[in-house]
Image (cartoon, rainbow, N blue to C red; front, side, top):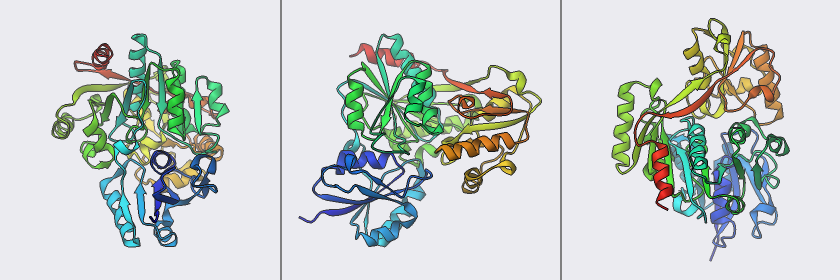
Length: 440
C-alpha cells in the first residue's frame, strides 16, 4: 500500500508531539516536511534522525510556512496536518483553503489520538487563549497538592527552540538548570516560577520519555499548558481558563473551544478588571458549551513591593511576550500594576526599539504603550536590553513571570509586578481538588 505523503504545519511544539505519538513509526505515512510559524528562527533546520526514528535516517526538514503551497506541490503531499494553537477560526480555514487549492487534504488530529496515558494522576491546566492566567492557576494547584502531602511534578508544554536532540528531555529543579539548558526568556518565564516554589518541572521534545521520567518521582503530575493548546496527557481533572476581557474568544479560537468542551472546571479569571456584562456573556457561553463543568469566579491579584517607584513617574511597561503578541491582549500585569499604583505616564517604547524588536512592533501593530519581553535567543535578548535602556523613562515595570533584572542589565529602577489567583466563589479550587484527592 502506498504511503501517504504528509506535511505537518507547526510552531516547534505540538507539531513535533503529533509526529512522535502518531507518525513516528507509522508505516502508512511518510512525513516529508514540517513548516514553522509564530516563533522567530525555528525554520530552516531539521527534525533530527535521533528523534525521528528508524523510518527517517536523515531526519525531516523544517521550512518556513510561507512556502506551504510550493512545498505541497514539490513533495506531492497527500495530507497536511495542522498542529499549532491560539489562532482564530477564520485563520484556520484560510489555511485549509490554501492547502486544498494546492492539492492536499487538510487534517486536524483529535485529542484522543495525541494524548498519552499516565500511570499517575494528571491535572491539566489549559485555557481558551494565551494570557488568561494559566501560570497563576498552575502554581495554586501545585500548592494545594503539596499541602495535601503529594509529591508534585509539573510538565510544561514544549518550547524547543534550540538543539532538539539536547532538548529531548529537560528537567528543571534549580536556577542553574535554566543556564544549563540555555533557556530563552520565554522558557524561563514558564520554568522559573516553579523553581521559586520548589516544584520540579519537565519539558522538552519527546513527551513519552518525559512522562516516564516524571512518573518515577511524582504522586501527581500537573500539566502546565501553553497557548490555548490541548494537554499532551489524558487528564483526570481538566481545568480551563476563560478571559472576560476577551468575551467570545472562548468560542472563536482554535483549539480553545475544545479545551472548554473537555473541562471539568472552568475558571473565569480577571473578573476585577472586566465589565459585568462581559462576565455574564462568558458564563452564558460556558453553560451552552459545557453545562456540566464547575465554574469558579476568580481574580488575578496584582501586587508590587515598591509602589512609590510608580506613582507620578514616567513608566515603561514590559509585558509577557506571547500574551501581547499572538495572544492579542492589549495589556498585561505590568500595565495593570501601573493603573493600580499610579497615576503615572506610560512611555511608548517604539521610538527606542532596536533590531528584531522593531520587527515585532511591525508584525503586531496593535501593541500600544508597552514592550513585549521578546527573547527567542541571545541576540534578541540583547536587543530587548538595548531597547529598555534607550527608552526615556523613570521606572521599568515588568509583568513577566520572571525576574527580568537577573537576565539583562537595566539602567533604571525595576519594579516587578506579581500576580496570584484569588477565587471569589465557592466551591473553590482547594475544595474541588481536596474532594478529587479524597475520591481516589
